[in-house]
Amino acid sequence: MAMQVGGVMQKNDNHAATVHLEAGAGSYGFLHVNANGERFMNEDVNTQSKSCSKELQPHGIAWTV
Image (cartoon, rainbow, N blue to C red; front, side):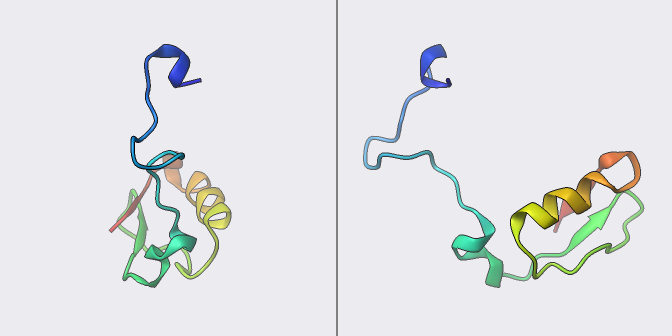
């Protein structure tokens, strides 16, 4: 859909420039905190679990530090 409105694919690869946590960044020291500055989850879970957990935080807001 993005290409239909002017987006382009990378010239050197055939997919979008994204990095999922399971693709290597999972070993980095990320911390997930909510709007109150509280850590609310185990960061060593899959991306879907992280997304669902963040939606349940106050005002649906969370940050990855």
